[in-house]
Image (tube, rainbow, N blue to C red; front, top):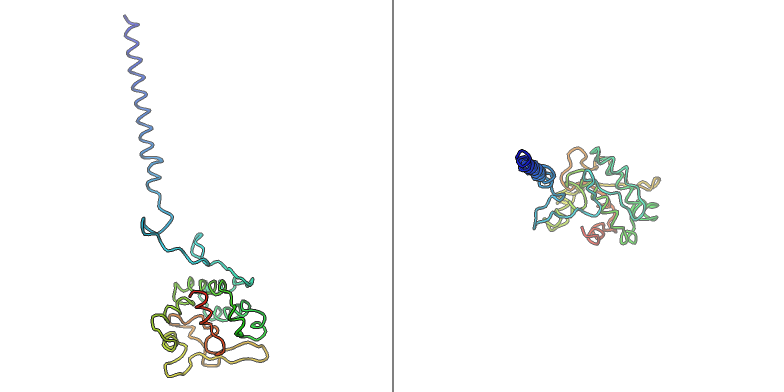
Length: 226
């Protein structure tokens, strides 16, 4: 008789142990790995059925939103990036002018301004890189895209120039350049420099605007999809 009573007891003990193990597995799945999966955040900022807009090709989202320094002419934009990160608009304005001469081609580098044939073939990659650098540093306040957005809203170049602080509607230039034949570079006339202290939206960059009437940067911007 004692031997017969031990068998049910062993069975009951085994069932209770198995039940506890099974409950533990269920709890772990619900509160361990399962909860981590359910709490995971989507990598996209968009919502299902309404995905977020993809970033421009010249922008990478690793760590923080930083423009990639892409160039079709092997132009080094690292100094421009550094100036813009410091919000040094004056240094960045000058660096933009110099680096876009490099991007335009050998004639522009020699002359200090971009001749029509090189402007017609200006690399879109470089324009987009410069635009992205200015846009990211200014939270969208500056850059070619910002300027073109203002132009589309106003529908008139004269109104654009007035709005961004380059020229009054009366025709008076607020920003003017003078050509230095020794250095073969453009410099701002005294009292006609950009507003580096409190620039309005769209004020920068000012390159290839106003001082070279035979060349249209606007044509290159349209061609490049700005």
